[in-house]
Length: 417
Ligand code: LMR
Image (cartoon, rainbow, N blue to C red):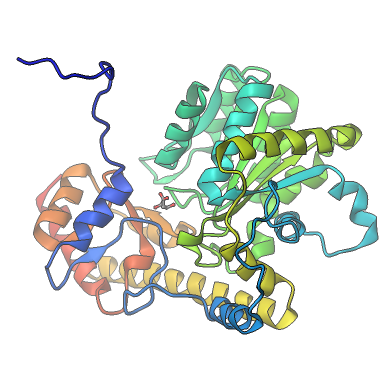
C-alpha cells in the first residue's frame, strides 16, 4: 500500500447529511409517481415550491425602487432596521412605550438563517456560559447534534417521544431533567412544531418546563424555526418563548429565529439570534451584543441582505402583513388537510396500527412510527422518500398522491415489520 503525500492523516470520510442526500436521490429518480416526504420544505398541491404571494409583491416593489445601495455592505450586526422587526415578531412587541424596559433586555443580531443562529448561540454559550452539557430532546433535529458537537459542548438527551403511544413523553422529560441536569447546563427547546416528532408541550407543560429551568438554573435555548407556519398564527406559535420572556423576567434565555419556512425564504438564509438578559442585568445587553458582533465579524462579517429586504418590506406594510398572514394560513391549512386525507385513507384501508398521531401532530412533520425496513421498502419499491427515523414531511403530500402514499404504507405495513 502506498502512503498518500498528505498531512491529513486523521481525516476520515463523513457520511452525507441524510436529509439533503435523500433530496438528491429523489431529484434523480425518474419514476413518475415518486413522492418526497424528506426535507422540511413547503410544496403546493402540484408538488411545486411556493414563493409566497406576499413575498413576490415585496420583491416587485423592491425591484421598482431600484435602490442603488441594495448591494452595499450592511452592518456587522446585520441589516439594522430588520433587527427590531425580527425581535418584535418573536417577542410580540407592538411598539408601545411601556415595552421599552422589556426591549432593553434583548440583544439581537442577524444570522445566516436558523442554522447560523443556532451555531452562533452554541459558540457564544460554549465560550461564556461554559455549560457542562447541552440537553437535546430525543429525538431532535439531526443538525442540533452536529452544531453542538462542532461548538465543543457535550450533549445529553432528555426523553421526548413515547413510542408505545406515539405521544410526547412529558413525565420522562421532567423526571430526567429533575434528577440529572446540573446547574449551568443548557437545554435546547423547540419553540413550536417540534422537529422531528410534530409533538409540542401544552401550555401547562411549558409552564412546568419554565419553572424547572428556573429552579434548577438550566439555561433555555429556544430554536424557533416554524413561527406562524405551524398554526397559521405567529403569536400562537411564539407562546412558549413569550411565556419564558414575560413570566420569568430574571431568567436569561436565547432564541434562534429562522425565516426560512414562515416566509418561504429557504435559500436566502434569513435569521436572527436574540440574547435576553435578566431584567436587572440590562447593562450587559450591549456587551453581549458587541461580543456577538465579534463572532460574526470573524466568521462571515455580516449576514446577507436580499432576504432581509423582503422581510422588512412585508413587516413594515400593514397590507403586506395581512397578506403574509393569509399565506401562513394557506400553508398550515393545506398541511392539516393532507394530514386528515392520509389518516382517513389509512383508516378506510384498515391499515394495521393506530394512526391518530398523524392528525394530532403539529407543523411540517409527522413522526409516522414506520420502521427502517418499512421506510426502505417505501423508497425502493414505491419511490416514496422519507428519512430513516420515520419522519414524514407532510407538505410532500398532495391531493394527487395522498391515496397512493396511503396505499403504499398500507401494503408495506402489512408485509414488513
Ligand atoms: C428539515 O429538518 O428537513 C429542514 O429543517 C431542512 C434542514 O435544514 O434540515
